[in-house]
Image (cartoon, rainbow, N blue to C red):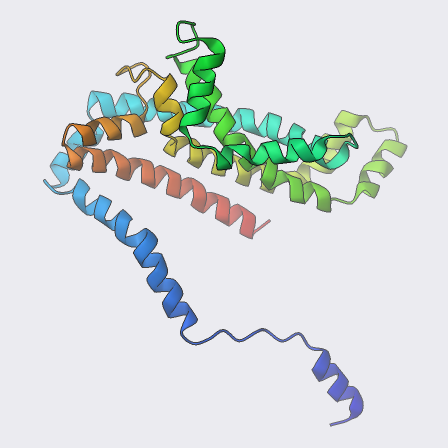
Length: 265
């Protein structure tokens, strides 16, 4: 082998070899932490057969609470897109003092107990206001919990975008809006969509912050996770598990779509 061939061979990137037991350990860990608990929920939901399962998920309380959960989660994800992209733009492009504090505050919902946003909202608006124990309060607390998902999804992509393309568009006479829509937005769409789907899945599963402010009125403000909790407290674990399976399927589909979008971006 010539010196040149040896140099080319040495320059080839080599993939690190994983230990043969690594996939087995990872699979066992995944089964213990994720698959077994979820499997137990599915099995419990069919304790009394398929007929009881479908009766549980099609009851009046179940359908109304699932519908409320879905449309509030979708609305929150849409609002997150608008404010999340705007906040990401500020974090990446604005040269202002105190941006490190803003950046830290974005992470705050991940660290706080989920009951805190609900308690804080009641303290701010008052327990006897028109917002408390109503649908607007559900949307507000879900916004607090889910906004970071869109910001953190968009921010790294925004940092990677070549600013020269925006400068070229501005030089050619494009307005700020036109530059954003035609130059910046196409590059951000996959990350925006992925962040929105993650925020949607998080909102579907949120319980702690919402249960404090919603009032849990059947047919009005009773969300699906709160209904699950109510059924557990009533000793009807099979009904609670049946509704949980529906929520699990919805969240899993959203996260699967997100993974596919991110993988092909």
